[in-house]
Image (tube, rainbow, N blue to C red):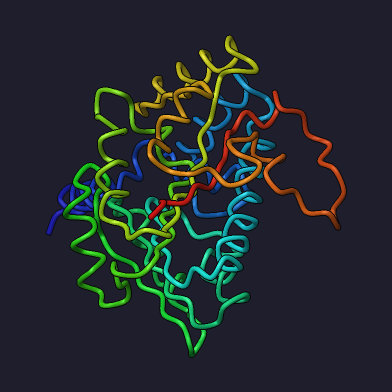
Length: 278
């Protein structure tokens, strides 16, 4: 085979995994100080940081919320978790958090992106009593996503489930009908189930976040920050737990850590947990 053909095949494989263009999950990994990213991701991340210098604060606040929400849900007695759009693995993983509270918890991670699924084996180190699985599924096809999750045999939809949608719907513009997607997922869950959701907002720095949208778009990534009222719509028909929809660092902060030094403007992420009533 010629050198030219070798290069063509190599480029084709790279393109298939999206390594030749910026990717939101790898950018998120970079913001967290991870190493599963490429020069294209770092360049795009630099452009976003130029538009919103506190982006790393926001990402870390979101990550800290994921840990606190997982602990909270496990302490409410939830034993089943579905994490949609889990992104590049970053410890502590959701299953590590919830299984530390409830060793027998079952966690299914779902994502449709091949570059994310490359790292999925890092998410299957369950406790002996618990279960973790990773599946390929697409939020844009909610019924099929739930069918794929059910086929794992890990989740009993007749019992309460925690549906985790963190830092995901930011990348689902209104034209893709995100409210309908979430509604279909929640409809399938039994009473007593929970939805945990986090979402970026431009409420505190609108001009900065307009620039963020432009920076992502420049690199081929669609994103849509939403207002508090728009994020609240995702919880339609559910009962928000205290403290309601809050800026992420204000949602049940760790008492031992003391008050966060970050401002609402720096974090610019809304977060909340809501229960499906009987």
